[in-house]
Image (tube, rainbow, N blue to C red; front, side, top):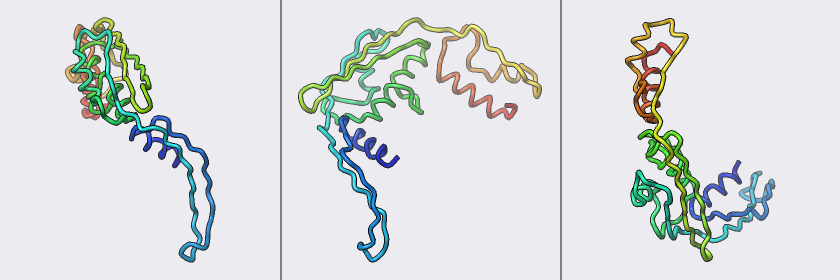
Amino acid sequence: EGIENLKLFYRENGYRDIRILSDSIYVDTWRHGRDGVYFNINVDPGPQYKVRNITWEGNTVYTDEQLTQTLGFEKGDIFNETKFQQNLDINQDESDVTSLYQNIGYLFFQVMENIEIVGEDSLDLNFEIIEDEIATIREVSFSGNTKTHDDVVRRTLRTVPGSRYSRQAIMRTIRELGQLGYF
C-alpha cells in the first residue's frame, strides 16, 4: 500500500513513468539505541511531464475553451493524473466534463482520451467526444412503500416523466428521499 501511495504521489506531480527499481524492509538496532523498521525504496521517476496541447473533436454543445477550462489544465501545467481523471470523469462536486453533458440530458455521452508523449517531457491531450442523443425520463416507479402515501414520495421527485435526464437531478432526488426518513 505504501508503494502504491508513493507511485500516486509521483503521478500527481507529473511523473507518469514512475518505476520502483527495488524495495527492502529491514530491522536495525544501531540507530538511536532502539529497534526500528526501515524501508529502502529505489525509485526511477522518469521525466516530469507538462501539458503541451489540448484538443477536442466531436463537441458541438460546448466549445473547446469551455471543455478545457472544465478539465482544469493549461499549456505548461504539470500533468496531475488524479486531477485529470477527476475532471474528466465524475467527481463529487460535479464540476467535470462528464457531468457537464449528463446534467443537460446527454446520458449516453462518451469521451475517449488519447494522451500522446511529445519530445522528452510534454504531453498532448486529445479527446474524441460522442454526444449522442438527449435522453428523457419515460417512467418513474417505486415499490415497497408501506410507510406513507405515494403522493408524498412522488412530489419529492426531481425526475419526472417527460423531463430531460439529469444526473444532478437524480442525485438530488436520492438525497431528498433519504431525508424523508421512510427509506
